[in-house]
Structures are given as structure tokens and as C-alpha cells.
Length: 87
Image (cartoon, rainbow, N blue to C red):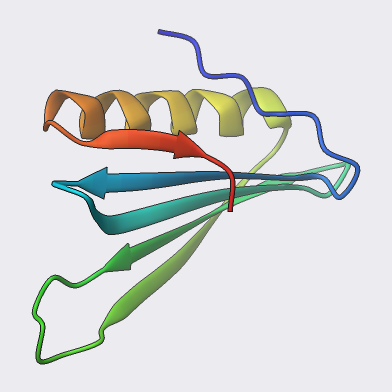
């Protein structure tokens, strides 16, 4: 499975991950030119809490970031999640 970073004038590619119709995570790839950062936001499913965990991962180039995103999206797909492109 190959997931290409979508070309964007802003240098940002966003993927939403849903499980049973609920947003569980967002991956944002930000191309800085010399490096690329992937920000992962994970949303808690407890209705009494609105917890969001946000973690940036910096890669030396877009190819390395693309590999990380592809492996992450493949894992979510194996877990039965739906992946959507966009914000």
C-alpha cells in the first residue's frame, strides 16, 4: 500500500482516521522544505472527557514522513478504521 502525500500549496497533508464513524485520530504532514513533520492527534473516546494527545514527529525528508504515514494508516486499516483525506 502506497500513501502519497498530497501536493499542497501550504505544504500540509491531512488524514482523518475514523472508527465506527467517530474521529479517533488525525495525521498532518507539514513539509518545511529541508525537513518534514508529521503531527499525530489522538482523540480519547470517553464521552466524559475531551482528551487530545498531540505528538510531532520530525523526519529528514518527505520520503521518510511518507513511509511513517503509510505504515500508520495501514495499521489503522487493519484495525478496521476508515481513512479520509482532508481536514
